[in-house]
Image 1 (tube, one colour):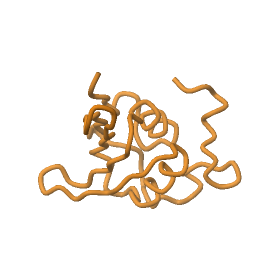
Image 2 (cartoon, helix red, strand yellow):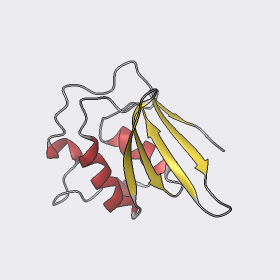
Image 3 (cartoon, rainbow, N blue to C red):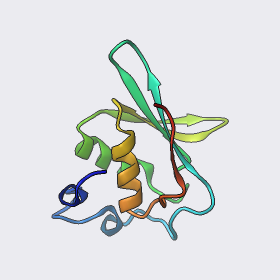
Image 4 (cartoon, rainbow, N blue to C red):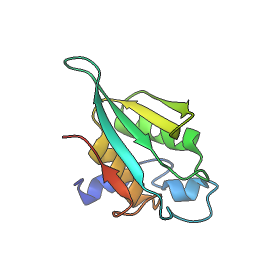
Length: 115
């Protein structure tokens, strides 16, 4: 787990994503948010996040993640799985901590997959 001092993600003058108006009504419902690890090459990997509620502005979340986690990422639209966020590198624990801290998901609704 990340230390208490790292929970300030530095999004805006010490603020949080909740203060940035994500345009959502409630926190995650009964749906799960899945965070996967996928190996690309011998040294490279993806972190794949799916199941984020539709009322969350994914572009703003991705922009914050790219800044906070120092990585690149993209939003994909899969016909079966819906909107998916791909991040470069293994950022599973950081993404899970971020989702729980910002109230987008709960500890029970965020599922980590992979080693």
